[in-house]
Amino acid sequence: MARHTGPVCRLCRREGLKLYLKGEKCYTDKCPVSRRNYAPGQHGKARKKLSNFGMQLREKQKVRRFYGVSEKKMRRYFKEADKMDGITGENLLKLLELRLDNVVYRLGLASSRPEARQLVNHGHFLVNGRKVDVASYRATVGDVIEVKEKSKNSPKFKELVEKHQGKTPQWLELDTEKMQGKVIAEPAREDIEIPIEDHLIVELYSK
Image (cartoon, helix red, strand yellow):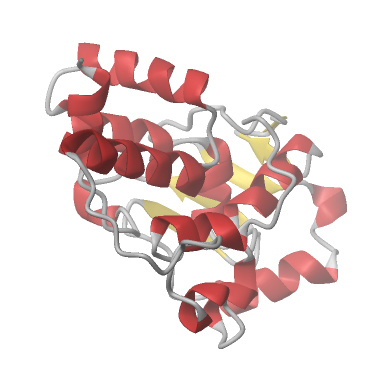
């Protein structure tokens, strides 16, 4: 994704919900979305009635920011999802959920998706015993993701695993002692953390 250098909390406020881009801060009273639940800027409090296109655009932007992908990459995912069997919108979300940075975050080995992307890029993880430093790498059923041996002694990873116990989604399996996770199934539609009307994204890209 083109690197966002501004305050990420503004992105959450723009979408009107928490995208969990700041890790622990998102779960505290300091979260700007909880304190100022309106869009940023001078006219943020003004109520605006969105057109059909506006609703489609906001839904697409919400998903892009949630998973941290560029517009170019998002379109590629859509084209691939459209060629797959099944419902295009659900296929799109499944492809995004299977990104390695998202899997790392969902396993609790990072406090946020941006942090997971950084940790993956810095080479802290192995997939099936081999180092993978590409955040967009697509995990498949049976893949084993683990913290590399040199990083396992880091207090950061130990703290993250302890805090995340019991929060692993059903399609993933986590061994806290080994700091190792496994993809045991493909993610289902109900596994998505935020409310997304994927049909609006499909309508937008189908024009």
